[in-house]
Amino acid sequence: MFSDNLIHAIKFKNNPTVVGLDPRIENIPEFIKKAAFNKYGNNTKGISEAIYYFNKGIVDAVFDVVPAVKIQIAFYEIYGADGIEAFYKTAEYAKEKGLIVIADVKRGDIADVAEMYSKAYLQNPSIDAITINPYMGEDTITPYIRDVLEYDKGLFILVKTSNAGSGTIQNLKTVSGTVYENVAYMVDKISKLAEGSLGYSSIGAVVGATYKEEAKILRKIMPSAIFLVPGYGAQGATAEDVINCFDENNLGAIVNSSRKVIFAYKSQYWKDVYSEYEFAQAARAEVLLMMGMINNAFLKRRYIAC
Ligand SMILES: O=c1ccn([C@@H]2O[C@H](COP(=O)(O)O)[C@@H](O)[C@H]2O)c(=O)[nH]1
Image (cartoon, rainbow, N blue to C red; front, side):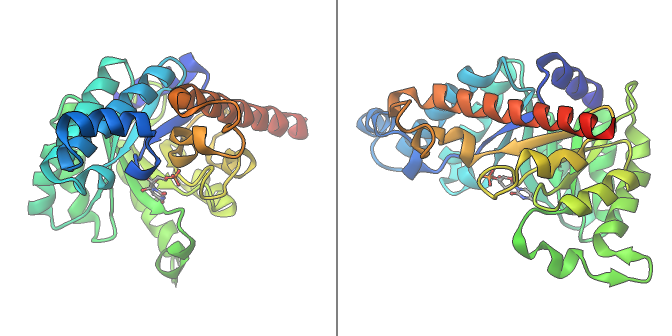
């Protein structure tokens, strides 16, 4: 089952971090762009080849230390069919390297249309899980639930997102709590349908790392949901901020970092250590640092509790 596989991978690697493959062409090393553009031209094909080559380097550098990658489809869609090809080639490559592949597609539409989106991703052998937007209502997520069970895949439902403006809608108060709490109650109910042998569900929630207090509330409302936690690093959240997303066993969450990891070679911290030719080693160093920070935060939490 998806949730069992994810929990096993997190335990095996002792690492709950996920590398986000959100390639921005302007940040990809010049030597990669030069090679791809010389071969295919500075067009959607050349850019998509550069992206794929870059992603491959990142995957090769981190596959043994992280359980999963999250691929944000927007960075591929922008390059049309060539970009989509790079998206699927990246997913296939990551899968070949034994990684769990999360496609961050944030779909949401009426049920008839959702059925198409659901099949498009959840039937694909290279994709293990997707993100969806539930804000059109419970009926719109039913097709995904069916496919999660049929194809043994995972689902991460947006509950409380990491962006600064998420409160304008998600924090609105209703007679039964905030909007995001109500969505969490719905996710909790649905997640019971897909619980694995380790007590975690293949139907999880997206909870932003940038909302520490909300995460504490949400952890209680959805005890068996695995949280996909974006917002670490580039959006400002730290290991201390994500700790509330984890349960008392230090499980139940995976923390994503995209820009901060994949473009680490350009950062203030690593730029004097790694050259652009060593972009992948820099990403590995950043991810190991993140892993260390989160594992330290677990120790600190236990120490304080004693
Ligand atoms: O609430 C959300 C949901 C998804 N995301 C996605 O996570 C990454 C964040 O990238 P960083 O570079 O680490 O900031 C990106 O793919 C978003 O689409 C999110 O940020 N917040």
